[in-house]
Length: 117
Picture 1 (cartoon, helix red, strand yellow):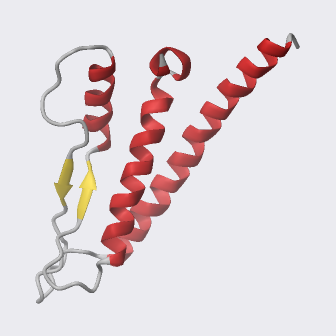
Picture 2 (cartoon, rainbow, N blue to C red):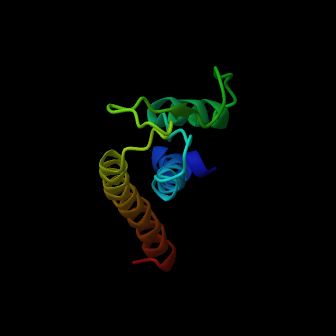
């Protein structure tokens, strides 16, 4: 039902939210020795989620967490690069906002149709 009603945007919104949490966790652990930065392969996770919604088999899990490779490894084993994480967080926030606008537009259209406007 979700895919028919909102198209790809419902699944994308959920994944953007999950990715926001992963990136926020990376930022929160920027000073934790040995912490390995992670991220979601958004394209692969979205494909898997849409395939699952259609009842098709998909390779791998629904949300694919990957470890990031640091440009400049730190001596304590932490792979979080704060500037990179902040950029990823900002980009994801903009994409989340755009996706949310699409979903809100769809809901507004349905609401107007139900009211007979």
